[in-house]
Length: 429
Ligand code: ASP
Image (tube, rainbow, N blue to C red):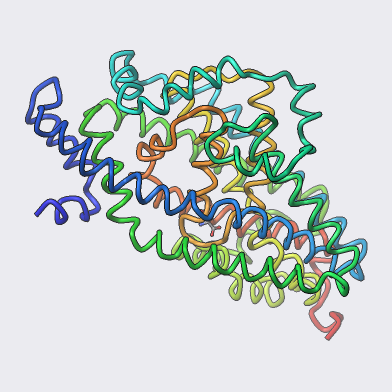
């Protein structure tokens, strides 16, 4: 019966019911159940994701660079793709962070509820204290960007015990690894295959974790809602509004602006031509699954040169995820507000950089960003279990951010081609 309750999509509501039935405080029996059953299952689910985050990030980032290097023959196109992707991801993250700082959705939680939450995650709250005292200056963050010892940074990246920038340093080391591999692809074929294998192993395990998601995420949500009650739902509503507003602004302001400046297609014509790809992205929550439709739309409706479309959209399906980058930044700052963690300017800069890079390292599958979000949270001192707070709305927000991810790829492809209105017949075969 318990499994029945937890497996249902209404787990947050059940958590509220449990909390409400017991008045203002959590009943001892419910408390025991949360501590020893739901929290344990929830943490096992999270650990399954932690376990593969490092191989996933290292292989995904290095292989993304190798792929870009591989098509150096595309020269200008490769460079312009990087440039546009960088600009769009950075604008998305900055937009999200500005909104989350203005709206401050995490502040909707009362001081008592926050206290209860921090106490529940005692291990995490010890972390919070440690991290707050470890806040670094922007100067040190820049220096630590290149790790002295990548292996040491990797070891400390997950639990936040690294001496340097942790996950950010690992991400930079992976970019260097990819660049070096791309410089000598023939000699390094073995290492590239190894990374491809590692990536596929990590994706397989994430796939297993995702089949457990209804139970694991349900347990995390149950524990949190049973502890905090209705309040958390109000906070969550503000969080969802912040994310949706950020995604909307990127969609109706940033993309049209970039299209007007750098392409010959008008924003209105662009959106009407790609609407099919947007619908598939919304329905599947997966950039990868939308790739065939995006390719068709790019070639047939937007009339982009086939080679350019193929390159930009394939690399972009995992490498250019504007919506995901925005979401990752907002989640980390929102949860920092919820847990009362004050982030210094340096740490916020770190969140921006990590979110952009995490957008590149995120797999284009439903929930692909969740493992990275947990690592990002922990690297700024927010307990990983806190992700349970957003799990209840993650699915719907995943559908929305995937629309942005796919639209962003098509915007980049259009701008890079620069000849969006040229007839299809003039395209290279
Ligand atoms: N579902 C997203 C995509 O496939 C990735 C994520 O943000 O979880 O593009």
